Length: 144
Image (cartoon, rainbow, N blue to C red; front, side, top):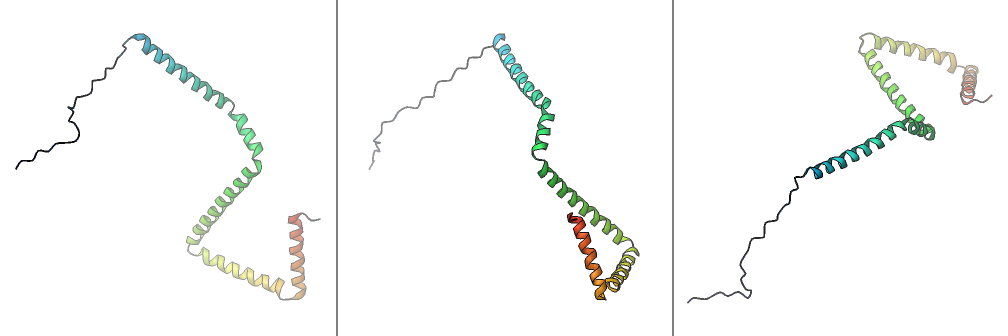
């Protein structure tokens, strides 16, 4: 009981591909041509960089003139952030001194009591406080 297996496709013998040949030119002219091309490209890049750096003050001046308001706004925001961080650090340092924090709390309570007594108990004093606040508001906003 032997069964012969026959394929529908014909068997082809595998042949290895031919070895590609690489031609290496060891002549001096090709190496010098590559060197000349590389040096020319480096010189072009260097010329572009030097022109850019030479015109940098003009670019910066134009940028500052064009975007003056946003630059000032960003600068003020950064300065406010730094100021808040410094104040918080200063308050943290003051709070670490043993008797200084309770002393400041006592001074704050005494000042609050004086302010209540001076400006908020009588109607005439409240009117005086409101007129002082209005004068300060007009002075800050620039109203005559």
